[in-house]
Amino acid sequence: MNTESSYRYSGEHALDLAQLATRVEKGPNQAVINSALAANVATLSDLQARLYSQKKHGIIVILQGMDTAGKDGLIRHVFSGLNPSGTSVVSFKQPTHLQLDHDFLWRINQALPSRGEIRIFNRSQYEDVLISHVHPEMLTTQNLPGVDAVEDVDDKFWNHRYHDLRNYEKYLRHQGFEVIKFFLHLSKDEQTHRFERRIEVPSKNWKFAPSDMQERAFWDDYQEAYTRMLEKTATPKSPWYLIPADDKGVARLTVSNILIDRLQALHPEYPKVSADTKRKLREVLQQLKDHKL
Image 1 (cartoon, rainbow, N blue to C red):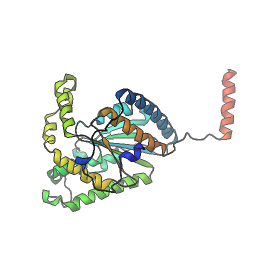
Image 2: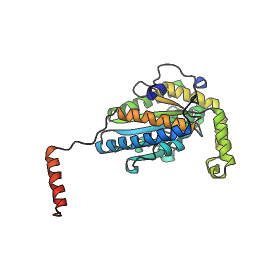
Image 3: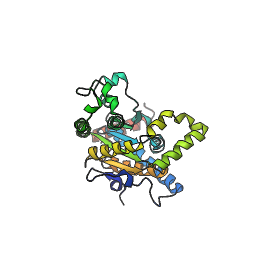
Image 4: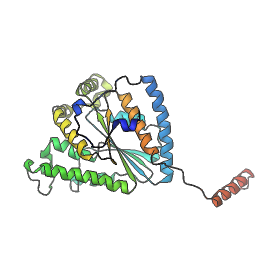
């Protein structure tokens, strides 16, 4: 079964996250995962080198998911073999006052990769239709036209944001920038287990904050916000990939498989060297061998 199509969601039908699997039944064992992931990292490294030398496409990898969904670990394991000169990560936190003085996509524009680069967004512009959907009161302090009270944050407001997000990615695609979006779908039971580990294991204590528990109380609201966001922003040319995230190893392997499919579809190649340049290179090589240079 083709991995890319197995997890691809293009908005063609309504979603029910409660019915969507968070774990792959009868998935591969850890040894198989480790071997396959190592091979995939090598393939991604080769593809990245071709993208970087060709400098035609920029790649934006978006990772979204609930707290503890495994975004950081996925970044470490899937992108570990890529050249740092052409790969980087941007983590989007709470907007600063400077960022709030601009449009909501301003900080995203500042973080876009150059052509030939792969940039991973740990959270992204989609936070602006997730956390603010759960806490619409946040929007009333951002000096947005027509938003003076929570009642102003209505369906019309959200539909404008979804429209802008869809068309922003369309614009980027026209400029040669591919947006590859992953939603790491985690169960509440697995989140419980991972929070327990963060508290019980001293080396993981730094990952835990009391605010994590405050947001967990809004679990159902976030599921609703994610559902609406996925349905409204998935399109045939800019799909979301809905990744079962309860098993970290399987999630990492699945994401790496999809990335390979998407990058190979761009057919990145090293720039062709002209016959005249090849002749000059051979001349230089001979001079080097003859110790004349």
